[in-house]
Image (cartoon, one colour):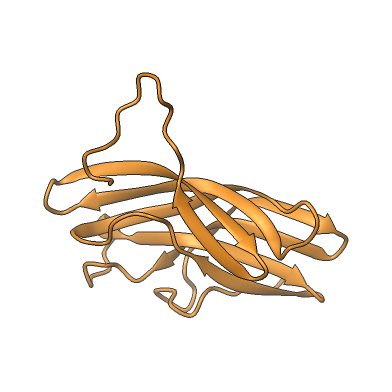
Amino acid sequence: MSSLPTPTNATVQNAAVYLYSISCPTAGSCLAVGSYEAPNPAGTQSTSNLTYEGLSETLSGGSWTAGEIIAPGPIANVYASSQTLNGVSCAVSVSQCVAVGTNTVLNSVQNQYNSIGWIATLNGGSWTSIQSPTPATGASASPFWP
């Protein structure tokens, strides 16, 4: 069994990779999503501030290809983050998919964790990410997120 490839900016050669969902619209054509260990925005890499970014793994023609999916949200003052995609659906092909997940960051100024939901859409090979809408009734937005 061979290992899956990781994006080129993975922290180490054998970076931790977590896959949480897969969609196979046709036989031999699949897209899986999850997260992988990536360079830390703070410039250090210790177990107390590991950073994980959104990951896609695409199966086409018998081989897997890794891709990075960027979550929406601020970059400033981020000490550690966890961007995870938990679900994916590709109705017709692996070039048109929708994935959902969460982006959790530790803000070094406020010293607190904040999370948002996010939606990533793949259309023709390019991912676009947006913050998921919050319910109108009884919901309050985090002061950390715009």
